[in-house]
Image (tube, rainbow, N blue to C red; front, side):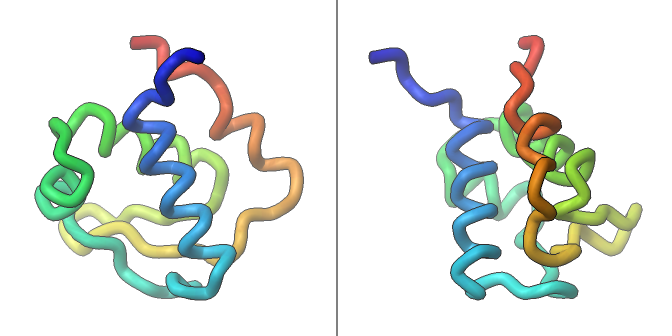
Length: 87
């Protein structure tokens, strides 16, 4: 069984935290540095995960202010998240 890429683990974790209500609309996510420490990885998979979640409309990034939860993912947004990282 192939290993799950780190960026995918981050996506799944954030989505689960939103679905469970642990993260709510308007909540600010930890910084990239904090996420790197939490997931024990470099910034590349963290940025890839956040970018895919932003593309799917799950998160919203604000330059200099952070990344925020938009709300629960809308049905049908998984295709934007599921695409391969191209790395």
